[in-house]
Image (cartoon, rainbow, N blue to C red; front, side):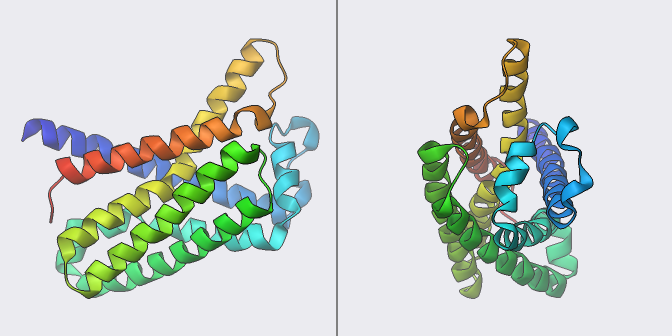
Length: 218
């Protein structure tokens, strides 16, 4: 019991931290797209990345604004006291969460098909896990509609974990940047973006299964 509680607590801490990272990254992306001069190109290590997304400004905004909703509402879907005391709030926030998730999934796949920084390594990771993201949340909705709440919870965790991987990928990328700089090299995002995406998505998928098996069902 003690071990399960410790693991569950650690997972919650990680979820809150990653949700904060994801919301911060999405907010920054919106600011940079709306005000391109918000960061000096000379002091901006992500200048090339910003230029990439600026080419698809409307599509990127359609992706990251729902992403902010996803990051904020995601953790609330798993708060037992909210579900028990305020079921209507849980249902309506869940509907908004799933709507935002659908937009994120579709726009994410579209952006990947139009072009990625990391080439086919990154594109393949996004296409595989992005499709699973939509499938998992679709399954979660189906089980909720059939009042199969244990299964609903499991698929919500799987879907949310994949979506949260976008935040997990950021510190992984930061690690690759740091290693390159430590070796006196200029970071080349195209060389490691694909690997970072695969590491992030796979790690989050594994953690999701641990959460499902270790945390209480209700």
